[in-house]
Image (tube, rainbow, N blue to C red):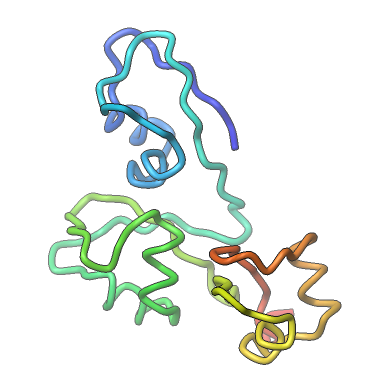
Length: 151
């Protein structure tokens, strides 16, 4: 995470555009009482690893389902990495993050075991640790790995 200090007159849409970060991602990690920002206010900004994610600009007619299908990931995972619900409205021009080609994502659920993660991702334990460092298996932990063909 990075922080950003709000300048005079700035609001979330302008900050999100300037930093190239989906506004929903900024909202998801900040505990805003309201969305009116004040000069000098410090907000949390997510940092995306550009070796793992690309930014996708929503086009007219896009849905989370067709974008997730295009990138070969689950709509639930796409929604989760962008701080969205499957029922959220997405609009043309909105920016979301998507995994680069050859990157697979897994979001842990309640009761997941290392064996579940390894089996679902067709991974070795060494790969899991190499790409993720610490793996806690708490619900909603995002785990990343490169597809074998891409290595």
